Structures are given as structure tokens and as C-alpha cells.
Length: 318
Image (cartoon, rainbow, N blue to C red):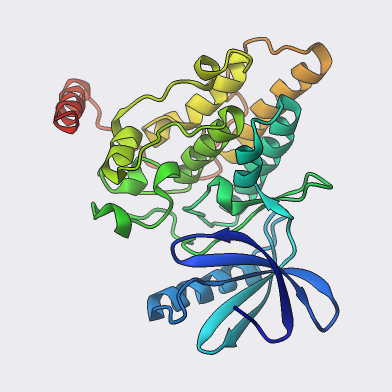
């Protein structure tokens, strides 16, 4: 693959539909990121998605989100050019081995704060995962990337569909984003995906792992994952509890803001640096919503919901 005016140096990420390269602009030798399609002839809908991503990023001024520089067209294929944002992905760092707690805090606090700013700007990312987080090894700077399916809507109804047709990355997807929960999707879906990403960062594994898409959906909707502290006893319980709160099935039971997550992570970080341990404390004391959200909980139907979940478990188990 080539793009006139740019020298493609290395591949950062390749998915089913899109590929991301580190590159240099020939005009001034500036380092950039180039995002384009795997297929030589992308569909009109895919091209429209890249145009929408350019429009969102061109106006979004959030520290920790790569600025869109240009949208180039070559041989009927669009290429999104972004400012350089890192030499590796968080996924690659996880594959290389479990990170120490100091590095975890450095990355996690940045990512929570970036999401808080993105949500404050009225954007729901809808695809937060370790492949979409770029890291600069030299500085430790973190950048949230790939706004290809991001939305400006305050909430979106979700309908059940075939797993391969659901927008997003299934292993990191909130229960409501699967379309199986009869719940609208809002910015708190990103906080669930943040929880999955932090779980992976801590343990080197995902909360639910399967080659079967329906089994992954079942895990997000109905199963409680093994906590990070149970997987690795070296992980402090308060840190594990933060991640598990993010992974709550019901959006109303999660953190309600990225600021709340960042505040609790900062408290853990400070204790770890000063004492080498983290004492238990009440979570989410600084977790304040900046918008009004009507709860979608079924009140007075706890027993009915429990029976439905039990039936779902039995059917899924055959």
C-alpha cells in the first residue's frame, strides 16, 4: 500500500476492516499516523465512517486525542492522516508481559481523564480497547485513537443483531452495546470498555475469553468475571475493586464519570508510592455526573430479572 506524499514506515494495527501505519510526511518529514482500509475497494458506508471520524477529530480539541491533519484520497480509497501519537499500542505492551503497578497507574489515570474530556465534549467513543490506545514509550504519553464509530448522540437504542454485525470490538463491549439488554447505550458504555482494558492491563488477560462470539456476549450480559485480585494476589484489592465497579452489568452501578475513576486511581497511586500498599477506602466519593440520566432499571422486578438471567444461563449452557 502506498500514499503519495507520505512514506509508510511500519504497521501499528490491522483489523478486519482497517489498518493503521506510522508514517512520515515527505513535505516536512513530520511523523504522522495514517489510517485506511484493508480492502482495496471499501464500501460507501465504510468511507462515510472515515469521513465522520475526520469531522469529529477535526473539531475535537482534547489532550490525549490525536488531531486530524488531513483526509487524503488515493485510487478511490480514503486515508485519514493524524498527528503522531505513539510508537506502540497498549495491546502490544500487554502482549509483551504484565506491567508493573507504577506503569499501570500512569497509563490508567491518563486514559480515564481522556475519556472524561471526550464525554464532556459530547462524544461517545463506542470502541475503547487496548488496540485503540497508543503509547509513546519514551514519554509514557497515552493517546485514545479510532473514533470510527463514535457518536454525538446522548443515548442510542441498541437492537439485537448477528455478532459480526455489531459495531465495536466484542471482547471489550458493554452489555448494553450487544443489543441483548433492552437498554440504551450512552457514555457509560465507554466506562465498561475502560474496565475491560484496565483488567487486561493488570492481568494480561480479558475478563471473558472465547472464540465463540455468542459465548462472549453471554459473558458480558450474564457472567461475573473473576476479579483481578483473584487472578493475581499481588494486585491490591482497592485497584481490583475499581475495575470490577467499571464492569458492572447495569450502567447505573458503574462509575458515572471518567473523573470519578481518575480520582480513585490517583488516591491508590498516591498510597502506593508513599507506603507501598493501598488501604481499603470507599469508592466513587468524587464520582459526580455532569449530566442528567434517567435510570433504566426495572424497579420491583428483581425476582423476575433473576429468573430471566437464570434461564439465560441454563439455555447458554445447553
